[in-house]
Length: 98
Image (cartoon, rainbow, N blue to C red; front, side, top):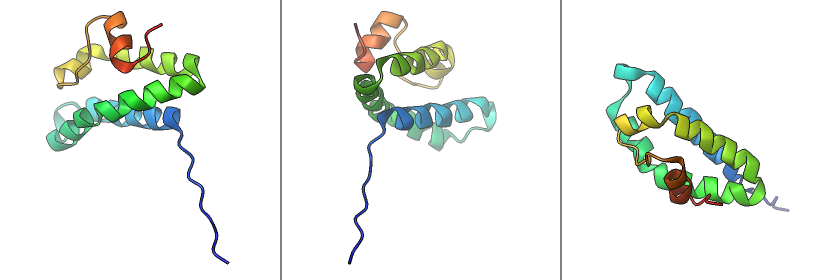
């Protein structure tokens, strides 16, 4: 009898993993691999979706993660991440506006 594998979609976990990956890259500074940084920038769109989906399950946790990301704004923008300058615009961009 074949076993069935159930894959659970965990958007908050995916969003947190993405943020951890990006922080690790940014913390490397000059030693960061430019291709990996480009990959991280390209993954920004899926991250926004994870964050939006996470908010449907746990809005407060998603907003807390969004605050952490927004606090990294200067470093993110310096590497080409499309992060708006204002909190309100950021919330709208990631689909978490009130």
